Image (cartoon, rainbow, N blue to C red):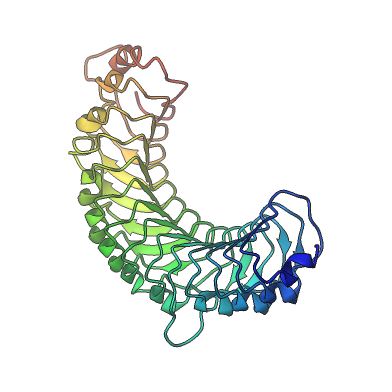
Length: 343
């Protein structure tokens, strides 16, 4: 990298994104004390992030994403009160995410460390980042539990933590984050029951806990009453019980419902067709019984219908599968899988 900018004392904005730059970030970066916006996104810069970045006392936006950086994330970053957004995703960073002990004075609202090799646990004092709106830690090696006090992040809107060996139960305090819109916990090691408190997340648009094979119990009915939901994903778990009979009545924005590969029982709710925006319905590999609703044709946006490997039957005294006639109105349908049912 060119060394020049670090000796220009009044430099406030430096955007070098997508320039195929190589080399390292020199420690002299700390000399640019008036820097407010610094982007190296999409280059081939390697080496460590120097601890001297903590001297950038005016920095507000820092993007080092999509490079070849290694080493750990300097804890000094989180003591810069002017810092609003930082992304170091898509690198080869390792070591734990460390926040300095003691009081953290931070206005950080965006933090993305996804797609690295970060290890350790989610630090318990992350709740001192009280202004956080977006927290993305997915695709790392982060283990341990989600901090029980995670609900203190009262302004959080997007929380992505998928593809980590995070374990333990889902904290009930997540239900206190009324601003939460996206909660993504795919491919983790979560266990226990889904807390009913998640049903209080009235602004939630996407809820995904797919492939957490130790999640058990019933899906709380309150979740199916969150009218803002667009995606519900609980595929590949050990969930049991029935799908609430009212499912669909309060989901006017639902586009994806994925509950496949669980131990769900009883009938497919008739009101599911009230979710008129539904595009993907996956209920395969459960123990569902009863008939396939004849009104599925009301789902005019339906593209994927997967019901195979259940105990679904045909209407008594009917020689034809009546639900097929209804599906003629699903002009967008591309995938229909109903095999391994006693139809």
